[in-house]
Image (cartoon, rainbow, N blue to C red; front, top):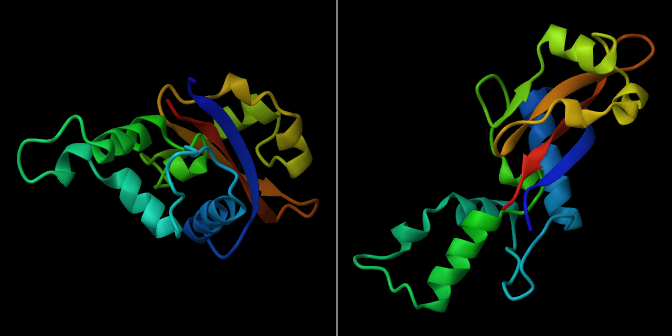
Length: 157
């Protein structure tokens, strides 16, 4: 299948961590992510995070049974991902999703204070991570206040 690009705009809520968590919850609740038809979707975002965080080899108390359906399910989940922001778990400097520098923001958007319209018109392929992960930038209203945060990146097999 290959990795998939994704991008989202989330209304700003209190701080960056709260905004990021609200976006991940929204995408999980809406079901806008890849999942295997043969595997039941997790009931909660916490369940999904637990499934994806576990090393498939850790589920065995000794020698893994490489032929077991459970082993193959866990490998499929760990390697395929959801092709969405649900594949990343941290936001901030040196995190899964990192902020653009002021220079990168200016180069990509033509301004240090992009709006939602400017973000939506930008060619995000100019700035994609080399591995699973992404970037974020604050989006401003006409008065200059932060009204949303844009997140984009790529993940998946």
